[in-house]
Image (cartoon, rainbow, N blue to C red; front, top):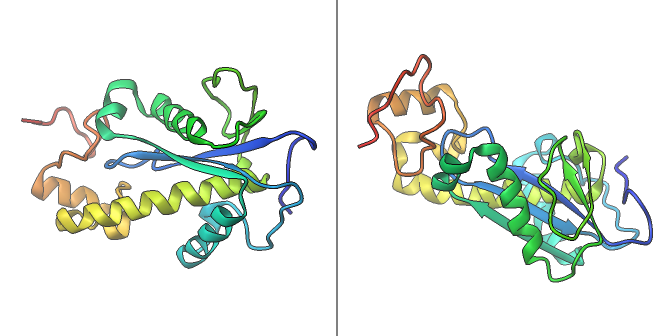
Length: 200
């Protein structure tokens, strides 16, 4: 049973990211403020849900939330600041777009760069413990999947409609055969045993 909040009587935003372990594409993060007493039997960590359930829950979350937003950090930015800082930046960008300012942030994971003026609590595996983080995980995942599905139309060789940029065998084989795209993260190990890559 997911918890509705860490502390009652304050406005809490749950935050989570999607795409951190991918070889290609932006990293997405979402911030969600759910109303007091919100409950939904099927709401859970996005990784525990089928694609169909994630997309069914997205409009429920968006319509029920007091506020929600999605932040994006590009592959170019990821290569400049590293994926950990990019994940935090994506969360910051989502928080900055919330139409209702939260009084506290619930962050999935064990590390976070503090957001100015708002205290936070990190929660390991928080997307399986708090409803607001679970809701954020669903929004981040589905919006990133939409983005990768759109890119897949332009780069069909990489089968991003199936692997969403994660390091599957098919994705790595496509990199080996076709090289990289402007959306690949050049600072990542794109191929096993990679010593260098020609990015020209």
